[in-house]
Length: 216
Image (cartoon, rainbow, N blue to C red; front, side):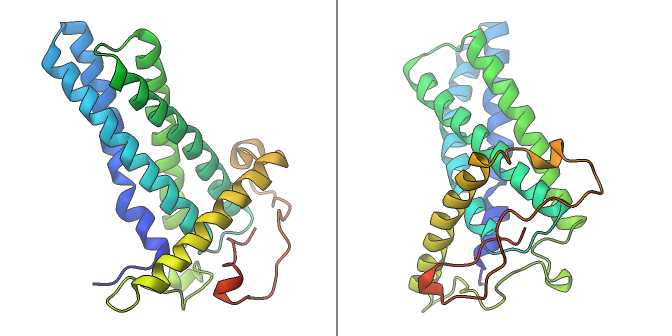
């Protein structure tokens, strides 16, 4: 079995999608029913959700450097990435707070409900990116680098090196776009109007010089 760089994200993203609502729901029920066992489930689940959301965020940044996304798809991908970054920070903060407190409070539950809403919306955008825009789908030329390393025996070092380069570039591109005001462009741009290119197209470069980002 092999796995491409851009395929790691969909393989891991279901962890926070499942665990975050479980954590918030268990804590809410545990609070309303004064049930310590439910609260303990919530406490454990938010810790696991934090691990899952960090893995999902990191692999999402890697995937963003490997796929083609243009015009409206680029706006969706940017919005998906930035909102998930906010959800990641919130989930990790919730896990840290919950580890020090045996009982959730109203602020914690409200933050969790908001995070669940954000993750639900970004999951919707992720589905649209694949099934509507064809991002990362080979027939739609949705992958920038078809020859990217795959995870298989003898290729682990090359796969890890490519993922590390994409992760660094993904973080850099996220902060570049946010600093330019492109936070949730899919929500702020009129539909059907192509967004300006955030980065100029460049000729392909060797892997050691840094992988190409998703096309804008």
